[in-house]
Image 1 (cartoon, rainbow over the protein chains, first blue to last red):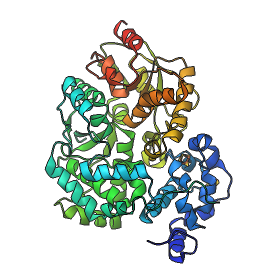
Image 2: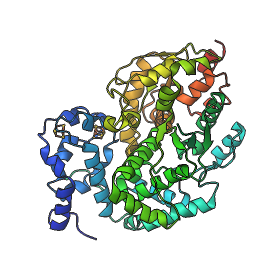
Image 3: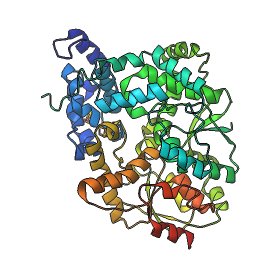
Amino acid sequence: MPETSSSDPELLNRLKAACKDTLKCMQCGVCSGSCPSGRHTALNIRRLVRKAARTTDVLKDEQLWMCTTCYNCQERCPRDIDIVDVVLTLRSMAVHEGIMLAEHTKVSELLLEYGHAVPIDEERRKQRVELGLEEMPLTVHKYPDDLKEVRSLLISCGFDSLLDNKGKRNAEKETI
Amino acid sequence: MKGLSLFLGCVVPNRYPGIEMATKLCLAKMDIDCVELKGASCCPAPGVFRSFDTSSWLALAARNIVLSEEMDRDILTICNGCFSTLADANRILKNDPVLREQTNGHLAKIGREFRGNIEVRHIIEYLHKEVGPDKVRSFIERPLNIRVAVHYGCHLLKPSRERELGSFERPEFFDELIECLGATSVDYPDKTECCGAGGGVRSAQREDSLRLAQHKLSRIKDANIDCIVNACPFCHMQLDAGQEEIRQRTGIIYNIPVLHYTQLLGLALGFSPDMLGINLNVIKDNKFIGKVENE
Ligand code: SF4
Ligand code: SF4
């Protein structure tokens, strides 16, 4: 697995290319001032934008995973930077470097197994019947052939191999 | 205009089936042409799967869209997350030939193809645009004399350049759909603010996520309302189950009933709270039920 440090020039080049829009940032702080998550968590989106095209350390920053993707910052950014797209790009680069939060690995395993990130449970099966619905929803839960299609697609895209990295690396609290 | 296919997603059928029932009852009562989208999967959820990997996010979304294309129907979503994924993926695949070809390469292995000939709708904007508050009002059997805190949720409105639903800072269409049922949509500070669930934050950073929910709930509590009404089962879960999670951590009790819009509409159309699964919430409030039923 490649090291996610600034000493990895190839990764840094990809990061720079993917986040080149962030170089338009004038560090005005409208984004962090609009950020509901920033008010209640450690997330400082202005700082993340600043780091984005400059250091691969940004991929290890746990703050990346505190953004609810509410789009406030992107809507208000005076430089029209698609900030949420930047966050999503950084996150997926992190995941492809093997950095994934434990709970997210679990959700991904559920998707691979059931085709649902939130599969049905016993209690809800009962509730469905009491409501007059079919016990199993008419989704991949009800149709095994459809579930097979979903799994084939995920495997065709290499989604399963992203999970092989689980536990090897986790996001870090502070990188500066 | 094409007929609709109902896309369920995960949280509605598997956690809050009352919302599924409410949706089906309302659509039938209002005579809206909508059939179930059989064999669909997770949309897949934008906060998590779109964050992880674009190709698999697009491929699964495309499959769900194709199932509806094959019926020549537009997709109706009842969740802001499903709307976000399916509307964004539909737009990306219609406009980006490279990603479309890549995605169709994966779909070919299961014998399907994205054609790009349907639209993705959200029940709130659909009811507002295609039915309209006046027509909705004509179906009412039980006018609701209650005070409502509406929670739009982020992905119904934003990114606004794609959603094209007017002001994301001070939207009105959802309030109009609530007021046409006889209810009052009460203004409150931070009305359009995030519930804290999205972006995979609720699943992996629960404590952070609940602090955002707590802020939102405290603003709503101060507005002296009878219930919260949302457009998204994930916001619904965060604001309903979240109240209990916050109580366990802080001792603060909000006790605010939470309804998906289809459940509020169902009450106005004359269905009982039990039929709509309102009693299946974590937060149960008999005072609210009594107030609605005895009007
Ligand atoms: S609002 Fe835009 S320009 Fe201002 S600091 Fe944030 S990203 Fe930079
Ligand atoms: S999208 Fe993320 S970073 Fe931007 S304002 Fe919302 S929570 Fe903050």
